Length: 196
Image (cartoon, rainbow, N blue to C red; front, side):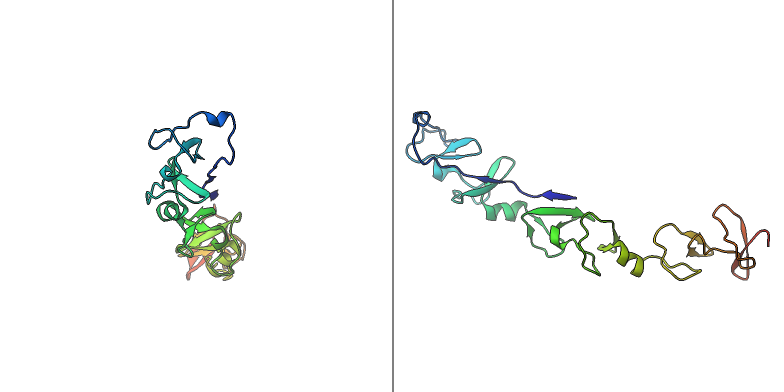
C-alpha cells in the first residue's frame, strides 16, 4: 500500500494592506490584538513569535511546516516525532510510504531481496521477513517436487511425506497420474493406483 506520509503547509504573510486588513486581527495563541506583523497559517492569525512548534516550542520560522492533530510542527520536530522509519535503510520516510509485511519502506527501497527489482504493484512473497519477487521465490525458495525436482509455484499434492506437482504424482506401475480424489496404495515407498 502506497501512501503519502505528510501534509506540508505554507505560512502566508501579507505583503500589503487592504481595506479588509484594517480590521484588527487577534492572535490565535495569546488572544490579543496583533500590532505590526501578522502571520496567517492554518486559517488563523498569529503574532509571528507566537506561531510555535508543538515539539520544541520555538517559533516556526520556515516558510513550510507540517501538522499533526492540527498542531503546527517545524520540519525537524515533525520528522523526529512522527516520521515513519524505512525498514530497509532505517531512515525517516518524508514522502510516499510503502506499507508491506508489517513494515514501512521508502518507495525505492521495497525491492526483491535477490534481484533488486521494484515490488510495488507486483505479487511478492515473504520469506523469513524478506521480500522476494515471484520469479526469485519460485527459483530459490519454492518447495521442490519429489517426482521431477522442479519448483512448485502454487498448489501441490502432499503425499508420502513429500510434495508433488499434480501431474508428477503417478502410479509407479502404469505411470498414470493419481488424481487428488483417487485412492492409492504404497509398495516399496512408491505410490501405485488401486487398479494396478
